[in-house]
Length: 536
Image 1 (cartoon, one colour):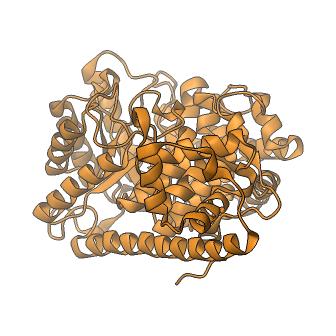
Image 2 (tube, rainbow, N blue to C red):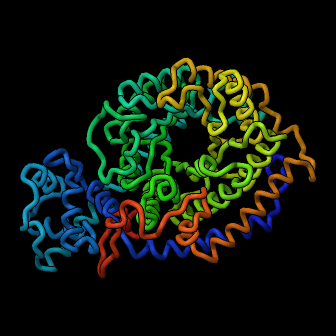
Image 3 (tube, one colour):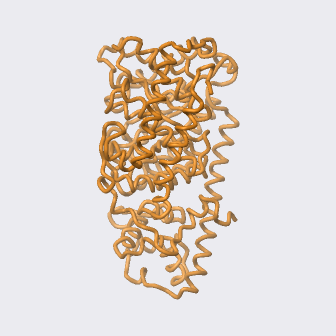
């Protein structure tokens, strides 16, 4: 197995994947017997429950919270909806509007005759099939525009595409105001950006509901809402047409509302969603059982809508040193892949993350970074790898920092990374200055052009530092996967084997929203996502 002649032990790779699949299989058994409040809210949202009630509380939250309180959620929110439809002869949207206007009342939770409920279940299943078809149609609309305009530099502009791979340039906007975000995003696209990531407002991942409507008051980022998604996608579509090249859009499907945001992203034609099997556990202290169940459902939605996920292993290197902990990144990449494939995602939609984070004072740090980047690119040749810039060791000296970003860009193009998240001087103050974003794009353009074919020209010494670093990391990753397979993933996380962070299986936020599926559990959206429903 190789990428541009880079050697990797194929047997070790086979063992690593087998271990990761074994690790994921144990957790998948837990997932298959549980649901969560966010999954059930997603089902209702897919059927038209998108209104808010008193104090701007989403109606989906009002219903699911009451079902949880009454001990009825294990049957599925769709089961409750079928009963209400049977009793009232109303559509889901009419029921939602009624609750938004008048609130909940006890009669909405009274049982009905089984025959009537069964007939209503058929109606709910048919409505869900239509919703799934609509998500597919939205994906086709997005993909048609991408096909028409093309992704990346316009034909005839810049180096010939056959010369070598060129990472897509990914930049962030984070004003807190969606309308200001649009201005920043359009400016970035005009300066050469290929993908815009709208950074989410600080701590939104800890909210167990999704705000409704456009927002203008986020801190350190902008709230992820369906209306904000629509506004940004519409603006980027217009700018894509003007520029003659498609501009991708990224947001976050993570935290306590992972499935709901995935659905909103699918409806509004997002291209990528940041979605990781372990990030929320390690870095936001969200309960691991909640996270594992939610990530599966959210990835099923991404698979249907052909949205590429982007994982967050790069964050491990903010709490643990890259020189000694990069193998945990690789082990986690194998595990994220092992969770994504059973959720229906092909390799082309599994964007795995890593980062350029070795202390620049280390001798030959650039060669070590090359070894790691080439290893990741070789292990996952069909996945759109996302490469993160140096942040942990970024100096206050802006000239040295700009040089470090240039070296990062050099490694990115030489190792054939798919997506390059460009480093910016002022990123730490939340929203980078427009000029700094322009300088970052200028830096990347020069390096990507000047070193376009470097990866195809170099042949790595079999016993050189670059290959030895890759070999060392892979051996350590396999050893860690063996350890995790023996302990089980939940135990391994509780012992701090990833990112030097320990989390308890029954600790963290959101455990109360995990529910065992009862006998006769009804989730027609899951049936559609797993290919069991009637796709009328």
